[in-house]
Image (cartoon, rainbow, N blue to C red; front, side, top):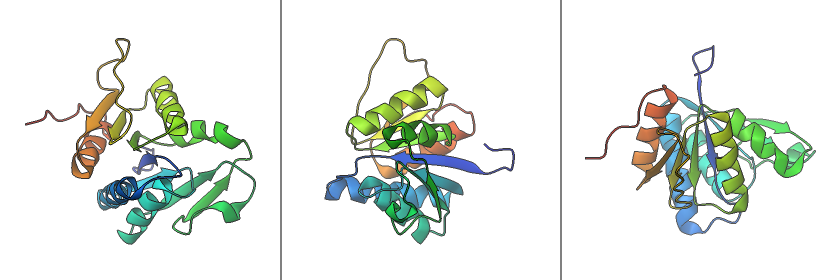
Length: 168
């Protein structure tokens, strides 16, 4: 949680999201906004746009961290657009800006953001995408959700520095 009491959640996922992934990202973005999170995304299309739309429709704030130099590349649901001019390296800024990261679906860019979040000690929740198991992963860093509601519940618990709720 930020010093100002705000909570930030990054929603990451593929720019070429299929309909199911976009639907899941929309629900996650909406749920996180309803829980009071400021959403951080890579600002583009696909899962990022769907999550941004869900958050804005729920009255939330959306920050887009863009890979290029043109603010016009942000999806229309972004409230704040940050141009980074560093290409895929902007993934570090997305992960670093969040208290918790939720990965919906995913390709190689999503995997890089998951890895960067792990290096930074940010908890990660995955939904319908990468399922990572690694002996070196510390408990509490990587969680798998079965649906958007569970992803949001996990994000809320993990962003507060708590443990993930046990599955029933």
